[in-house]
Length: 212
Image (cartoon, rainbow, N blue to C red; front, side, top):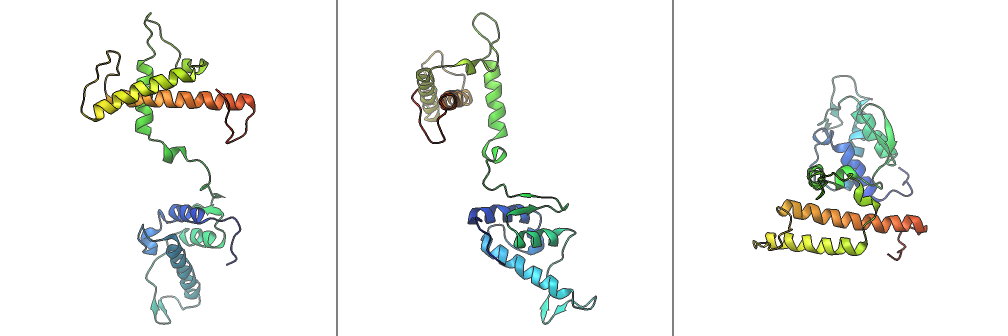
């Protein structure tokens, strides 16, 4: 097979993981087996399948080798498609799509539990001293980086104290460690938002810093 240009080991590993999520038992490989070994096994299986085509029905003796796996509908097509073109991801339905190994993966990098808890924290703190509710995106109107920095340190200090088993003397401290961490997220992502907003507004490129 001609080597595909631009295919990194990471791409191969990610695509194999997708491919073998429902084929691992069929191929008889362990989930921790190196991608190279899995690809070799896939090629061996394809070679055996090709050889099987030339053998009379009911005879599974492949010249001394026994056929020790069984294909499920669509699985051989998926393995063959990947071995022949690792840049294309193939599904059992016949659908194909480009590899996504180099794209961001919010579903994998974020925790739905943490995100939901953070939203609950933000909703709780919409209530203002005068009894009115602020809009959920009120913070996007702009908060100085210095305010984010001070808030980040205060809540990080409180989280640290509770983590170490101490008490927090600040009367305005968050209710518990969960809320401390939510407040840390708020200040960190709010500050990051301001940095990125300034970058977009200034026309700075990726990796370029802008003055706050």
